[in-house]
Image (tube, rainbow, N blue to C red; front, side, top):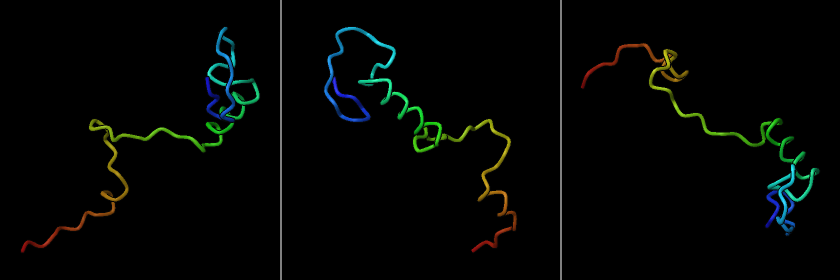
Length: 66
């Protein structure tokens, strides 16, 4: 198995607390990246959300027709 942080090959013969990382050090590095917001999940718009996106809130002027 390859560690997603350091790309080191390691044997995954017995499950450990560090899985899927090769060591506790790599596991901690990954956690640090999540907490430091270097990693993130995309935010999908919620159709039931009552707040309008910032680009819609400022655009309240009526539009002239063609």
